[in-house]
Length: 321
Image (cartoon, rainbow, N blue to C red; front, side, top):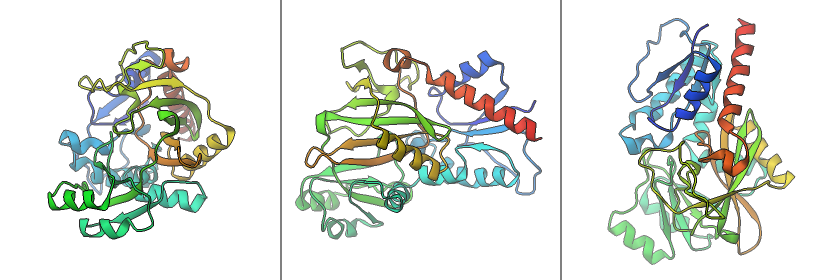
């Protein structure tokens, strides 16, 4: 059997996945998307299945060259008929917050009012019609990177004059209304195979934008979590988490979002606006880390479900061949 290609650049995030594949005896090979090459004229690469786990935040780890390269390679694989989990379409949405908002607009799903800009000279004009505070978000982010909050136009002008605003690797950003989270939490919903898997509430002070579920330290009852799925150097950020089941309408919206964006494995974040009680969806993650110490938080191991899903996909692809 040809191996599953696991395309990733982070040394720690996917250890539970590899352990699960080893336990099942499924063959796989680990591939680094930041140090890679392929020949245009080559025949079909020898993968039974390909799992794209490239992270948009790789540029924070000297991996900026992997982001746009990955789009090219995924298209190459798909042109050869290889089943790619989180393929070209999914990664296109993963690498553009603007496209995520455009999709929500098309689907009639509420999101924070947003403007798209490609130069700092456009930020002030883009705030017209928006409620302050606002945030400026790099179009390609990850782990909360490239997000700055401003309470006034004066603060924006000062940041621009001090050259403090970074639009990120594609020189594009969103100017977006900041949503004050009712209850002090956001909700993150994980999906698998286009369907709801589980949800958690992440309690935050509203000032930190790095809400990686693998970095969370405690449950709401104060129980320390074993952070075995996160980076070894992940910050102890004081975030707290609890399991939660969203309303049926929310689950339907999220399943529609991941299905329409081609995301096989991913998470969507939303919050309730404390000003008007409306639900706003604001982040789509094709590279989605499961919550740390999941069994103690949600009652089961999502990595086991993920491995089962990969095994099912592998069986289907083998049957086709």
